[in-house]
Length: 416
Ligand code: UD1
Image (cartoon, rainbow, N blue to C red; front, side):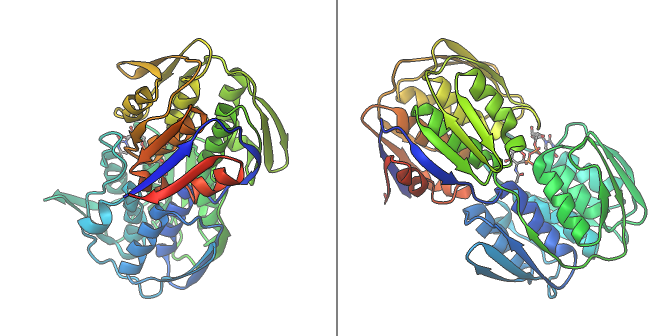
């Protein structure tokens, strides 16, 4: 068990570098299973979720060698072995091996995936889509079995634009016979990165980044090298860290367009930005209340909802945040209240009355982004904040406390 201890009140100042995107690297590692041979993936962040994916691929027979921030992956000896609970339950994104294993081997057996404790997160859209591509699916005793002699292209319309289902479809349909048209696809930048990677492997995909994606199946794919895009959620978290401490921070290695949904709300809340190339500089002043609704990209990301709630706890006036993606993503509310935040929940909306200050306390991270939000609140709170269960934060941020220490925060990590 890990604990982060913060003495709040220091304004963050300086330059901070964003790592590669967790949510891009996970499907890309999954996609590397689609063929044999050696690929190199660059800009791979050192995160617990990435380590879980590496373990999963290794279990399937891949040989993976990490050198700093690249992974050299050899998938020649991969076999579609049954994947049990021990690997599948550690992370929701382990479901991203479904499409590639089905595409390459026509057979997958996986235990139902686990993941952050933020809602029910079913697999129905993934499974229905694989069925549409011709797979026979059997769900029994906590296991999913999928089988197909050869996948066939299909017209698929998603009920909701699920990121993971869109990615599994791209990967499976790349190796199907004929054309697939996917409508109501998720439009997240990580899906564009996956399309780019798959196309380098020889796939024929177009339309990622819009809600209609066309995939022409090919007979085989070949390994390739790829550099992962920067993490827009990490970038957004740093911008909020600067804003909540009244700081002046330059966030580098950002694709500004990807963080625009977050910049728009921070601007409305009173922050000022200068964008130059891959850098965003934030000059923050007094904060005022705003209303936020989480939506699929390019709407405001659910993965930034806890962090912006921490910020609005200190904004002048009353804000509302409506969580439209996950039904159980308000676990940070009780912890923010322990720091003095005035937050009330009505259904899927949180009503936040901004306070002049927060006051340090002992709080517990229930999941990855909730943990980040508590660190941000602690940076701004008076006195000392202790964030327990801080290991959740390592699933999605590389050395978060070290990065903030360089910007002037008084923050340390200890083993509990
Ligand atoms: C991905 C991200 C996660 C982010 C989420 C929403 C990765 C590795 N994770 O998760 O960080 O919070 O997108 O932006 O990229 N749903 C169904 N049935 C399904 C699949 C999903 O009902 O079969 C629902 C979910 O319960 C949820 C919504 O669709 O309400 C969106 O989920 P989805 O986009 O699939 O999220 P993930 O891909 O799991």
